Image 1 (cartoon, rainbow, N blue to C red):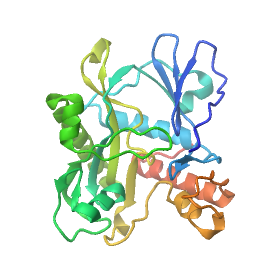
Image 2 (image 1 turned 90 degrees about the vertical axis):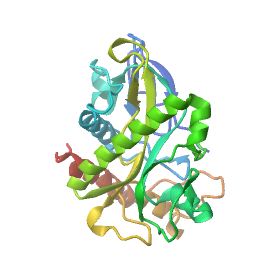
Image 3 (image 1 turned 30 degrees about the vertical axis):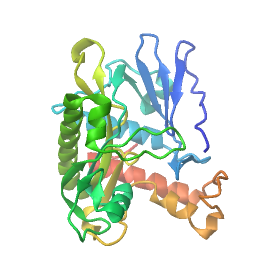
Image 4 (image 1 turned 135 degrees about the vertical axis):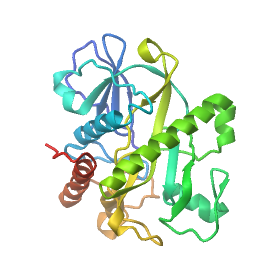
Length: 299
């Protein structure tokens, strides 16, 4: 699958490139922190697409920072008080280094995506049984912690059971990851509902602080509760039984799977450039999600 390119952001030489994911580029800082830069890249069907979505990185960063503030009384976050270089300040965060848990902390309040596929196959998600008769988009009896492995670029995350998290990380650690994830989801869902949105599911990354104020504490990392890591639905259009309209890259997925694109996602050939109207519609959805959640005008 297509790897993420290393972008030249014009950073000073002392910022050393560490890693590039599907969307984010990480650099070490001169004071041994990490600079997280959110690019305008977008991925779909495990490919990093050749077309950029203008302002996407800025939206993801500003929305993450807003959410970190809303959640600060539940769990600390990895954002440092240090400022990012001016060239990337609007799309970057300087963050403390953490010892990361090797698990995607997924929480689901509704049935969709891989959770829906698991339910249809086994009537369970990550080993947790669910009642019969649930549909695409159904609300679950209660939010579920449904962890997954962290996949490399081009690979799928794999859903795992809570017992597998215990084996990999320890009993107390697994319980803390579950407790924090559910608490953050419940707060975020409450806030989203006040803005007419449903938070169907989301995923978090959590680590342990290495030093300073939060040494040894559980710390929320990476991005949080953006349309890239979370499934938001308009509450007034929620109707179980089919796929729900969402505030993410659905326009991109729909176009790529349409005859217009001429692309077969199972062909192993790289996807084509996105047409301008798909780029514009996708950018508009990211902007709308930001503005509805924060109550602020994106600029």
